[in-house]
Image (tube, rainbow, N blue to C red; front, side, top):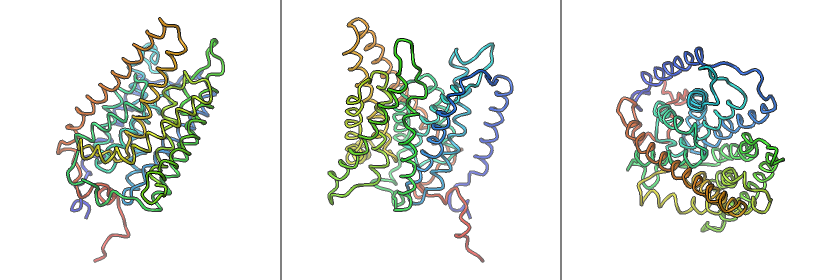
Length: 399
């Protein structure tokens, strides 16, 4: 039976889910209203990001051989809860989101909520397969309190998740857990997720960009730059994967993630990139660093720091995000006047330092709270396994 196989969540997950949804509904009753005069043209971008969150990240999370149900199912669960939480947190914490103690929902606020959910899913990637859905719910609530007002959501989500994974480190998964592997079928499904993310990433980066009187066409520039950066990332990911292989063959895991690194990097630097070659150069460097990180950094992180990053979010999101931060800093310093450039540099450095410090501190603080026995943490031998949480009628022994 299930309780004999793994700690049952019957008394945990339904109770936590009912309690959270009841609180959400009550808060929506008293504080949330629909804004009827919003920008309907954002609906297309909202739909693109919606597909990325639920289909892109959902399929991408199915890469593990025995964790496909949990990867896709927990992705939907976490994203659905995170969007509701983000709508409330953005409304309460951002002054422009509430009017006379009311939170007005618009297409823009829904897009912002989905962007916050994306950051929670990035953090989820670091602890993928090593936590149960009750722990996921607790982790996303903590991360969203801070994500609401932070620009570098890729960097925050990745560092937050990595620190939680460091605290939750298990000796039983070193060097590689026996169930932490992929095959042709799961690799193909994960590649579907990558393709969804790759196709809609220009909308992801440009959703919150608005054209200004002094800078016409900025939104289209961001879309063009993102596409070119992603295109270069694909070529570089395949090339580096083949070069670093002992047999001279490509690794599908590298393609599933490193092809997206250009979109991450250009997303941070997009407001300062106005020429195609700069966007392509950023994509080139981001994919190069990401693919090399997949080959070498993940194992070194495990042995040197006892940090197991399942989806290698450090290489897919944190490293390209920091690269984009440097690109934005250098481009602004080169184009602005000296006084304005210095002011921007100070502000820009402070943003990154605050983002990194908050993610590291909060990730470290969140980890121990998820180890409390009341959450029923998984046993080492039950990590990366669907049977701990899902029914499989074909495996039931008939007596």
